Image (cartoon, rainbow, N blue to C red; front, side):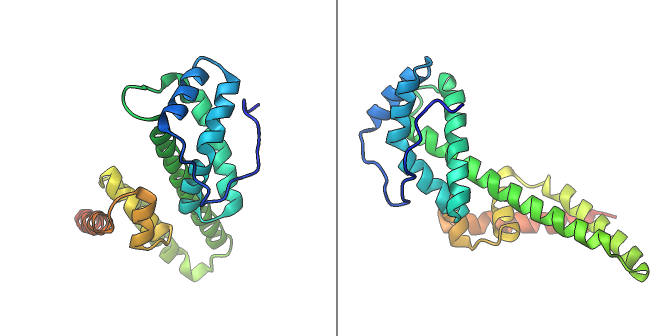
Length: 199
């Protein structure tokens, strides 16, 4: 059971301006198992967490679901938070962003899996060899993706598999748009080089 009270879901613009020390103090107590303190931490940070998640997912119901998942994770990880390395609010925001991006990847992977299964269910006899070649190319591309840096792979996946614009990817990753363009360009160049080296 989630150790905090459920309140009305905040809007994306309803972000708390409470002093960061309040969040850190509440989380410090929650890290020792204080459920009431975690409920206070939830009240202080849930508008921010929800707005971060909604910005990435752009879907109200998914954002609500992922926000709940984020707070379950924050409760579990609270004892591991290092209060000397930064604010509790920033830490929670980072976890929220990562969890939302993970959900984008998961949804995209499920969509691709469904598409592959649909393609395999009705394969005309004369296209069997073509389907085998396509599968081999997808496998090769998957291997090539592992050659990218984590930041390049993240940007390329969000842009091409997630269908997001440079600007949207920049907002999701909280980096300048020019940085996103560079990561995607370098990532695509690396993919091309790796694919060309394959036999």
